Image (tube, rainbow, N blue to C red; front, side, top):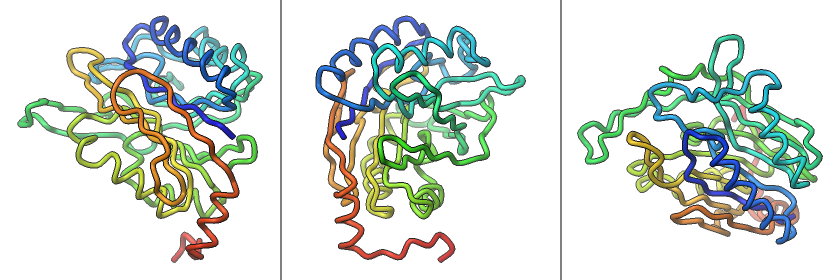
Length: 266
């Protein structure tokens, strides 16, 4: 299966973000891609101090605009998240659609980001708990023979989530993100490769990049990592789409080579 990963510089206006995504989806279709992964808060990027006013709620127009990305392109649309109003609580929710626009999985971010880098040159201070309510349930989804474990950004730092996915049969992990620049430079590549190596899974990390507003700047470097920990594609900087071929045979080969006992209780 050939997959694509879109790296964006999302802004507050959903129309601007969707316009860029649609152009990348046309390219992906021409490249013979089956599934495309989107980054965290791809639909509308706020400044982190309050939620975007463009909230998904039920099956409103914002929801339908996201669903149409899959329906109109004929591609699986996976991983990307959007702020969602659920009974008055704002969730950072991952939306996942099949190639005909059928909703196949939702995942609410479990581990919310909190960082105080006020003394760093970036002066980044973020506390997502002021904006979002945390999710409580992991979520896996079947995509063209692959078992995909869903996660969002700060979840990356909690290996027990991915170990549980692996033990439950996952062979691919989606980690859609909007990593800050300081933490991205320090930890992004290392953590993503570690999650792949630990679990002998593909890791697909779709990321935000660049200056989004006065308060938000993100690291980029969307990655596709194979189960051996090799980086198949790195988007580095800029808005773009990257591709890689993934195969269940590769997962089987790596797991047979390592022969790692897969029991989350140990």
